[in-house]
Length: 256
Image (cartoon, rainbow, N blue to C red; front, top):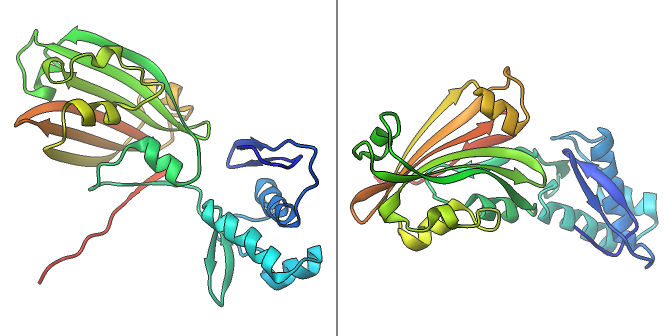
């Protein structure tokens, strides 16, 4: 992220730089104060930060200026504001919806953060005795196999291993998954018809430890997602998330 400030701050392991020769706006000074407080650990998730009145007194600004700083921090997902109660540091853990099929890149951007990915593997191969049952095909059928690490502002939050039916997604192994996600690609070539989900807690595999930068003691959430298109199973994905960096949530209405 860049803006007209001469500030460098860190939050949740993410470094953001601002550079320019323009004077720092008063509301930006307040935002810097809060962000640096979070970086130092002065403000932890759930802690109340200075109120508008306290910021007005501390920085000698108008109520409008103090309100703008807090509002922009809320819009960025840094703070949670409760009318009549105060402003509190938000929990930085990423959240994802189980029932909804959302592109992880869009989820990350919706939180005001940057998505990036590391493509570890994306090849065409023949289904073997282990992978053929995942897609319900015979051994020897052409499939695609990809392994991708998804990062939120530089922090690994998901290891995606996916098997795709070759005839359902031609060119999958040639797609640039550093620019688009497998979800985006498959949505274009094989529109979703049905989705099955399974979620379980798991210990990280050695490859998950290495690619996600976690220890063997880190509990993980594993989401297994199977997707159908044109009445056939086209994709089987194992999505592994570090438990300390990610959580699933959902809500739905129940009819009488």
